[in-house]
Length: 243
Ligand code: SAM
Image (cartoon, rainbow, N blue to C red; front, side):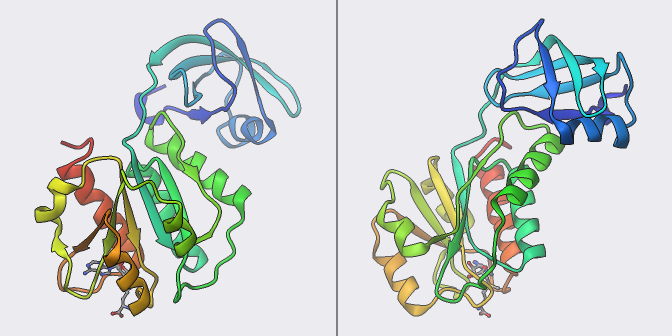
């Protein structure tokens, strides 16, 4: 199998060379019916703790499939300590933000309720599946945590002041990303407002906190999805693991 077509699956069961891993029902369906793999075919497994392992299909049952864990191919590598807080959006746009945040290497995702937030219902099981699928696809070794929807004020009241909170400000009063990047060493978090922007009260609160930084992404008003992807990309390029 070419490297390009590598099939990767995440498991929260710690993996060990020589052991048998039993795929769950969804994974079995995917390997057997979607990818049409057979006995002896290669699958890459990662567990978010020990790294990534090459395994081979040993047995295929009706609803289960077992794999022999053969050898380690990558040690575990933690993603940078960068979080994304975004005001929840309509379903498709939330999907984009979550998927791209995983690809861009965040370690935690917080959907946030702000004053002008679109009131979306996030289904935790669906979000978890999305995050795992994105991590499998982009070949990262860990799967970011996704928090339940929380109110912005609630999040700020429990904030660890050692983590810089960069809020993206489209009003023109923020610093440029390049200028502010030297103050964005991890641990860091990015906060993106909703389609309606932050309220005046929220801007005042954010401005008053010692650990926040207001940053502009230029004169154009970006959709919240674009702002999330842009901020994380700029950070990875200037501060994070693209350097
Ligand atoms: N309500 C605003 C308006 O119409 O003027 C637009 C809000 S924008 C669609 C959604 C969020 O993306 C903003 O709250 C901000 O966090 C971020 N954003 C969009 N454009 C930005 C820019 N040029 N600089 C910094 N942040 C931006």
